[in-house]
Length: 435
Image (cartoon, rainbow, N blue to C red; front, side, top):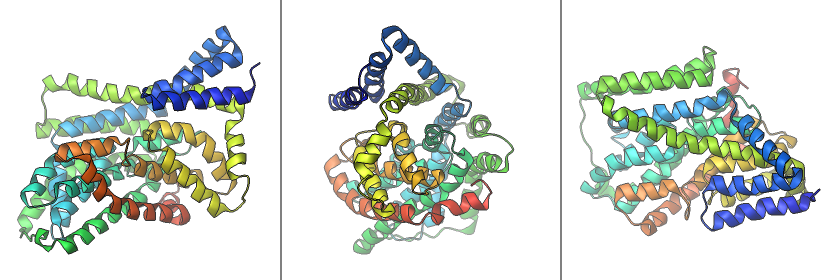
């Protein structure tokens, strides 16, 4: 039998090498994992076990929530939802300094909460807000940075596919509790971005344009946006109340999004196959990642990699603060070249047992992990949200990255707050009886 040390070297070395040469993340995880499995169990038994692990990894009723929530998000992205939510955001923050930038932040929170996708929010909101901001004299790179920085709030505010992936990777953490726990951190994320915009507005008072909006216009805007926001109340409220499971809630979200888009006449029947294809393509990537990660989890368990890594990295200190700081630093660095989904699938089995041993609730740790990785998904060089945000704003990456630095500073400060003040995360799940 091949030694666990050699297997660990093949698994980690192969993964790093394939990522470095630009291979897809699923291949970078799956190929070394499959080779390691073959070396451990032999060719025939290893191939059979790999196939069984992949099947069992995705044979989950809870996992069905991901493709349905993705489909609901794609339908809403194409169904005229973004414009109504942006109009609502204008009403809410329209009198704040630099109102269009503040509107961008608020709209990303609203649309991200509906779509559950940072990339979708950055594309939908950014493509609408960027021309308006250019027209009123906003720096193009700053406008793009504001859009990029605020878009990941939707990864924390439910319904969040990222939190569902963590629930599966952690071995059954309550999805409802994670959904409730994500609200306060998600709003803190938005507040941090708003503070940066406010500081920017102090140096650019010419951007503070006051527009008088009548009560009739305000009421009309709110009424138009209420059906979109009602989906969140319906789905999340139903899950919390125990009326249906997260998977059933995701199906309700799809039906609701279809009805709403039909009322808004956002797209026709001819567009439906393309929408289904887009949702299927996005979902299949996530599900295949979960499948190949199941092979990796088995190999990691065989090699005792989580225990060995914990002993080597954290064995020299029993200080909970130092361990958490080191853990968050590693996630910030390692999360940059990875998308949030594979990062969660790789590092949850490694870090969660360590966190639990220090008395950290799995729900709190899940929010810490997702908040950390939400910062990583906007960090160069590998950041899909950054690329999309710069593209829709028509700006080069370099000046956008420069303007992102103040956002990074306040978001990291918020990360420390989330990590070391667990009541911010846990009070809402406890209040609703989910934790």
